[in-house]
Image 1: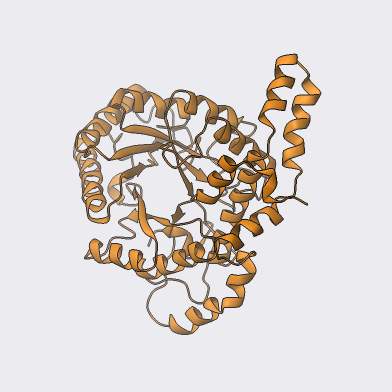
Image 2: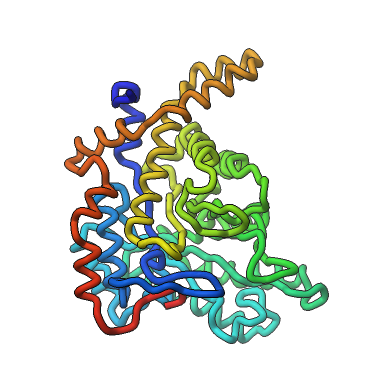
Length: 392
């Protein structure tokens, strides 16, 4: 049985202090283009979303921040929402901009051929910076749905020039402590070409902007078979990995619970994180979830995802770095692989249960939450009004 004695003091501290940011939108109703399924007790406003997110933190002790999506989570007084979060022992995390649902953005936002639409998109991001000032957030997270459906629809190079110009205007408005974290996506919703399709494109734009621009890696935003841990290692190597969006996918950007499809991949990613020292709180890497829970309960889905990241991290921290380095240096292929497999095959759940108990938490967060009665309580209380969902 694994126990805390197998972790050195540094590894134990890293595991104890690990935090994972939650997405507000994960607590609303979601689905596919065919159907969105509702559920009792779904939040009706950003205040209730944050209340649900706070439950995840209360039972895991590892989710103290909540990402907001603007305008979905915009309220009349953002400082009031910030106070509400603080009262529930969580804080506002990254602010996500939305320039993909307005009719004006049919042909793109920052890449749109119409200069008035591009100006509108820039203005929205500037407004997001004001939200950041009100909430204490320091990260502006940008994902663009910009792209083309048909060859010849627009000029590929010109769109990159427009993108660079728009990002530069937003970057110039940052406060010194703020960052742009720029996401990429292999495909969708455009069919022919996506304007920021990969980590290289995101990185090029970030490097042109300056040190306050970093790449966001979403584990679902790659072509099948992509070696994601290589991308992680490369971005860490040059100091440009700003954040993770953790989820799982079987086919494309499925946004399932992290570790659901390929837990070994999650372990390999966390091994690169540990190896580079990026698990430390001052590393500049923000670990975040970006998921939709279409058929499962939302709060338990987030709790399970946090636990899955913790388990992968604990396994990565158990890798015998000295033995691995010796095997690699000797060219002993099988021994090197065995070092990783020994750590991955270790059952770390008892270790994590010990760690939670030392922090005054229940050893099994999922069971403790389900026994708390919170789901039944919000189902009774949240009657009337419009349930929040994807896009609201």
